[in-house]
Length: 505
Image 1 (cartoon, rainbow, N blue to C red):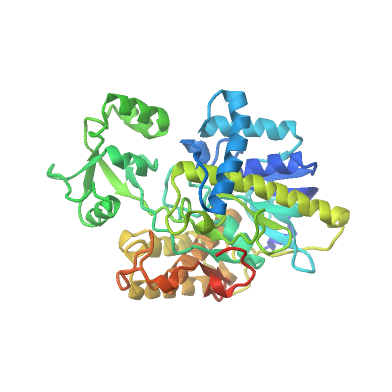
Image 2 (cartoon, one colour):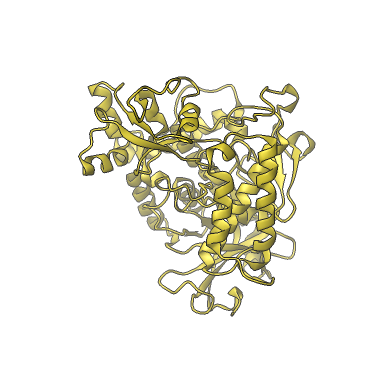
């Protein structure tokens, strides 16, 4: 086969490259362009309609100042950005599609070049290891090694705002959230943090894939015989539902909601009710089947480690924002709510855009001519014997992560067993993963995320926040630190306290 590097290449030059198309990516692009830099934004979907933010309607997180430096910064930045939205819309809630369409039109007015349906496959690095841009695929062509043209963007600074990793668990809006950004960052030497805090298990109606964790407050859950599921309305209600769903069908009815609340719920999440309305089902009066979806790192606090206030990763020229970025320093061991994560996307995207623009200004025009090499590995340039296809890699990762009794009910023995399976698959995939380039890279990213998650979960020998260990049920005060994860072929973990480059622990 012709190697990926042999594709016809369209070469582009910009000061700042933004990878992603959601709230974090578009705010990063807005702020970088406002800083006077040229900007290209590349997304695997259509900017304005793809991703988690485009599938929902979230209020942003606002309120009084917080004692922590990090939360106060998020609140202040969000308030400033919402002021801009309120001037246009007259409201401070953020309907996902409307907000992102507004962002797209602003980007076009600011002169940002948008590359829709143009997934980034790998980053470029210069001789000193600084990120120098990226390579990706153009839309409208066959996605195989012989016929798909590629594009190459040379950039002074790059912002990854690609979202988290939903492990292909079919939640609405998460089809593009396959952990791509974390893989790209790790390939150039960035670390991760908080990867063990990924036990987020939303209860979703069947077959509607809308994430509805918040609606559980107005729900009652039932067994197939119509009897109430005991404990489902407790603080650990989702865990009760998830455990029961391992062995029997579980049903739900939103019968705690009075008429005003019903109207408010419909306004807050119209996508949730669309399939019910189409099927003629009244979820407030009729029981409907539910399933449990392991949401992975879409709303968790784990991700690529941020080493400075502007989203810098410690790799020169590389910044992260939104769900791909770790925010355990903001939310700790418990994932943020929808409004909190919306605010984090807006704030971190704004900071990363400004940080990248400032880096580009310091570098000057040197980025236009510096030599650069591609940094991508698994799924791009197979060299090993045999071939492993993307579907096999993805199924292997999902089989070890998605089942509730593996991904959420953690025990050292199960974690080690799963990690052995995942490591063995990575040993094959790193040299032999081949096929559709986009699917191959997504499968590699999902597999990498699963390995990082379990490595961190093994290293945290306690139960803290959403990370629960059946063999270590108590909180260990000596482990009140972040756990950093490094590497791809050989994964290592270490307490953050041992990493002197961290500004805050």
